[in-house]
Length: 148
Length: 247
Image (cartoon, each protein chain N blue to C red):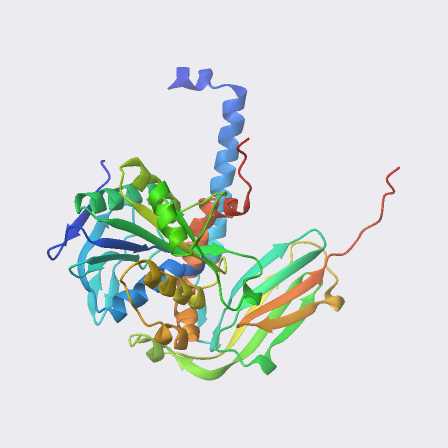
């Protein structure tokens, strides 16, 4: 064992370190996602969401089936966090899906999303089509460097 | 300890049948489509996969426990679904075993149903279905049925491995992939692919119920979509957007 350890090259150690780091990041992501989307206490459902960072804009989408279009709200909480809320067209219960051992009814979607890069929240564009909410956030520019 | 993987047959399994596979992948297209076919054709559960590569779960339906990866069928059709995302680290063995089982049952055609993610899916009212075949003859058959072929590109995940193992052991295989959302359940894409399936096989299934229940399905499918998304990330599913280099 000791002999094997001595034989490991510098590159082996580095690649092992990165592998461990990758595993750690993966388990962290999983543990963050590993929570129920149905919040019985607040009567809300957390929608499926996605954040895509493009070169000029960030596109946030959320899947909102049963959402009442005119109740959808997108509000910046701070410079990097958005809150999405929407009322459902009707109250949904676990019973509606054949689940009888859990009780709970849900009347709205709600989630908060962190945008990973600086964006201009004031100039966001929003559309709702096919039950999918799409938010376009222009990326903030720092300063220009002239190319000679 | 050796990994256990076997398909337990509960009822007689037909030989020479068509086998369709709807495993969790982009937009859950295959799973939604195949579940709808199973329900509309009232197929019986005839086998299930027992493997320690799958999560330690049972699915309860009508109070009875079931394995998550099950095979349904009648005298001329087999249909596989999994109600749990297949873990990335077990996918090779699971799919290899499934395809070999199909070969042992002498399936006449292995059909993989799934989605082809497109970024502008919201703007597409009628998703297009693309096809892939494991032999030139199957590609010709698809073209004759006016299915556009995926000529160049990458495939990643269950469909990719089904095609690969079909090629490896000479099981005729095709994939039917509808344009779909990447990580949102897409019943509309599932309906389109079921319609396309009826053009190339004698599986005739009405999709009106599937479309009517679209929103309900999207809500019910959220949890499995989330887990599938995690596994797809591990499989580097976004590689499907890459261009292959073959000079």
